[in-house]
Length: 544
Image 1 (spheres, one colour):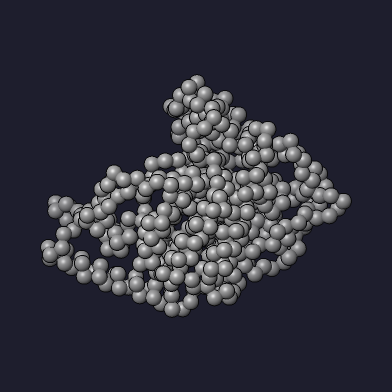
Image 2 (tube, rainbow, N blue to C red):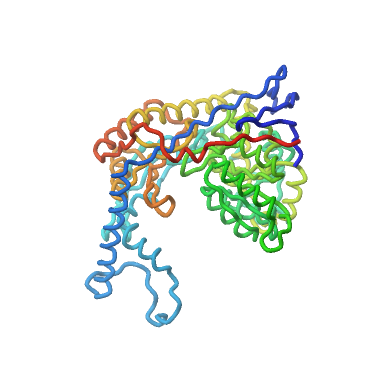
């Protein structure tokens, strides 16, 4: 592919030679002044390894749980213990099992012990504080009943409400109410039929302006934006190179496309370059024909690791090997970059370096749905060939208006600087929260400016105790374990918000300090892990 900026990459850093000034929504940003190259922040990420004893105890915990699981299954088969799990009917005993054995075993014997820490229902807007409906179980988490009590003012450290725009109604939402009264709730048609409203066109124009690209198309569901559009872009005879930690929506979209899929190590440029080089040299298996397309799939911020994509290096490789780049900015759009425009702005790069810009409105914008943006011919192609455009109901008009008002707020088109202030406040809160956790001795993953903060817990028993104790202190968190993470890397995932005050963060940090001592969670030895060696980079040079 041609290099639009005529740039060069040395030691993993892109030096742009483009001396044009790009006008962005009333704000002029000079990409280059007096011949000086753009400055890119160094990538500072932490993936400290766990102490050996913690890993051993973690595997022992799963092993003991598994042994007791087999013992309980034996007692269930004898009729001594009641089985509450779903089972095949007697008349279907000769059928192929509907449920996979290990998954069913894991669910009934391990997951059920800690199930009360997930799917907790809330009954308020997911702001910095929210209300949780109390529930209890009388049969060891197989079923729950509500007590009727509401746990008020729980500090919300789990929602992706990065800019605090998912809030209860106030006068700033008047336009959303007006759109609801004018258009109603639903569209009852697809985009290709009678489901394209003027609100959708207004939103798409605003998105393209926000991202400084030629065109954009919006969809009603963020997950489907990936899973239903990737198959429209690539197919049989194409090659997808996917980061090993990509979201399930990207994985599903890649599988549905019918393209060949190869996985590269997370943010590992040597692994990616080897796959690219082999793809160019050897072509397709058996026939050795050249691949029709090579598409690199990455995320802006990885939601389980808190890491940020190494975009300058990946762009250099995709230009060198003439591949296409698809970046999912679901978590990064609105949350990183000087004005909240995602990882492209975060690294000071040209939006034209990314062939397919994807993002969602479910996090920073306090709404739902997603978008794909880029060149006009790309978007025009998707308007015809996208499965979402052909078969999915269009975005609800009030939701579109909520996104419009949120985006204008971030861009400063509402006549204030409050949106920019929230982006800056989020960055301050993120750095403060991460730094304090490190000082306390916790092992945390990810980039120092990522608002997604994974705190490693490792042992399954500590996962449950951690979440339960924090809820008692009116702190709501998300804990994650196998199979969403590797078996020995269970964690709590904190999402920092601009709506969090310093007092709220200090209250959470104080509780975490106590929990760290009580549950012996301060594993950090402040030494480098073997894992960062994945990120050692070679020199890359762009070919004109």
